[in-house]
Image (tube, rainbow, N blue to C red; front, side, top):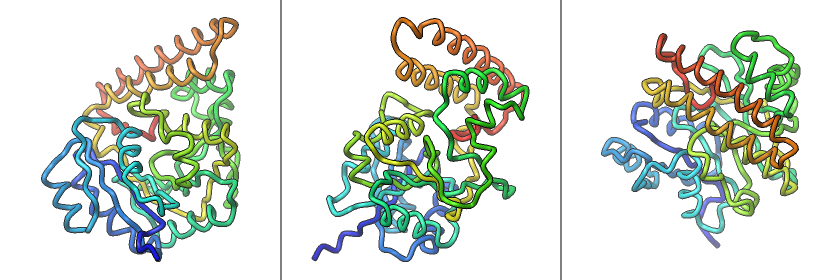
Amino acid sequence: MSSTPALAVVTVSYRSGEVLPTLISSLSDATSRPYELLIVDNAPSAEARSIAAESGARYISMERNAGYGGAVNAATRLLAPEVAWVLISNPDVRLLPGSLDDLVSQLEADPSIGAVGPRVLNEDGTTYPSARAVPSLRTGIGHALFANIWKGNPWTRTYRAAHDPSDEPRAAGWLSGSCLLVRRSAFDAIGGFDEEYFMYFEDVDLGVRMTQAGHRNVYVPSARVVHTGAHSTSAEAPRMVAAHHASARRFIGRRYRGPLLAPVRWAIYAALAVRSRILQFQARARHPKIDRMSV
């Protein structure tokens, strides 16, 4: 009988030594199951290597910064065949007691589910909209144009599913890659994350491809985690804004192909360019903490 745990936890580090211990210590209360922890380091450091050694984690030093999805894929390729569930988490996440067991139970109970995501709480206790619809063209344009100047606009509310306060599990178009549990077989079958998304939108794309492959994405609000955010990106906020909008453009270009949709694509590209310039200007002026979840 194999002693390999059926559960693995993969986190991607990028100068994350300050926050990794909190994530690691929260895992013991989040699940009663045995698990393997893998720390993939996109900016290899002695600090992260030491933290991995002290916690019994497997440390994976990347030769280059492969981005978020690329680093996760590199780790999952090293997992034993017996691993059935993989928790993918940012290093600046703290899992609350029982949250991981709750997520695994959802996957065990329904083989049609490919990925489950917890309720993601901000530091102030508010809920971040981590389970969203895949934006339609109309919703995408409205959100891009008005999200930062009209907070309650209907397109952003639809996109972020702000109209659904239920505590019951529900289907989602995609789940935030800051913390989600995937069925290993489903994740591997679709090739994991698309590594052409260096940062941002790799989770949106994953949700779309999961659905196309016949798997469901399910939000499980009873499982709760706290995301502090921005530890590795606040100093590079303007560059992160640009990266986010470049990934959005790539996603739109792939999802809405063909000559008939070219005018619509151009309109969305123009809206994204304007929004990117505005947010970069604001970032340079105020130095906000902009991380992978904030835009």
